[in-house]
Image (cartoon, rainbow, N blue to C red):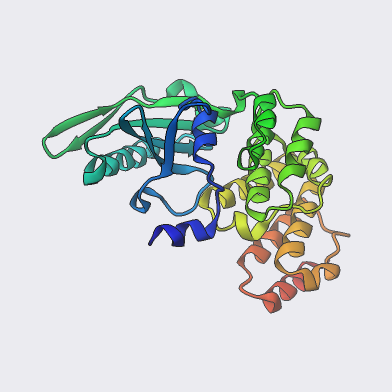
Length: 292
């Protein structure tokens, strides 16, 4: 898969200098050339798994950014393999390589994150010392002042952001499909149930389901958000999820949906059926079957 193939899916809008500044790896005023590295290091579209090459001061470095919404011991192997892949590409061998892990939720179990990864490779072992950045601790004012649209979605994740600041950031990206998907996914990590629905109602469009479903992390977070709402007994959140799905996937049959007589469990089962529906005909059958 070439670079254009990956970039064409646009699951994450790349702003190399802005992203490196956001994680504390590069000052925006620095005299440096930053480019997206070889496509061999780019994984299928996710919220952020990026590799940049930085040329500055007569030297070159490779910056690997990994984003995690939750921690899993298997992630150690995946991240280590990614780092090793960079070391094995001839054009990167003479360069220093740095790994930054972007944590998106407190449930990433930051107190258990390994201080080092040990990679076995031909010629010996390699110790990797990652930097961990807790993205929810970022400064929303700094992001807003920078005026870089690709960074605005991160405001939705930051604890210090007021609702007005989050709304301002959302309006800055709501007319860009890819950035809007990024914004709604990150907002879903901070807000839950009715709070998330109330926030999204302020904008011209809701969750861009088609884009979010293209990313493994996006789909996982969507499903997690729905499950979270059900566990909390928030029937309204499930009803809104069905409406949003129909609005963006099957708008022609949105008017056929009514939540009257459906409890939270029935709405969840309907949403599952809609997710599994291969086409509009099957989705219409799922709606009919859900009616009490």
